[in-house]
Length: 72
Image (cartoon, rainbow, N blue to C red; front, side, top):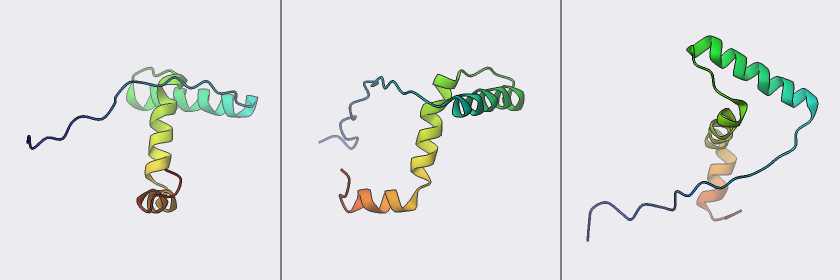
């Protein structure tokens, strides 16, 4: 048996959402601030997955629930 486990499914999944105008403006503002901060343009569509990942990673209650199998 290899030391490295089989890689998980890494096939991207496309999700389409609708947001309110004020959230859309906030996301556009965030993308502009990102460009100013890092000197690189990033589209909102590219930032949202990273934002969601950071949000979920920082939610301790969510992490605890996933460890116990709730919501899985």
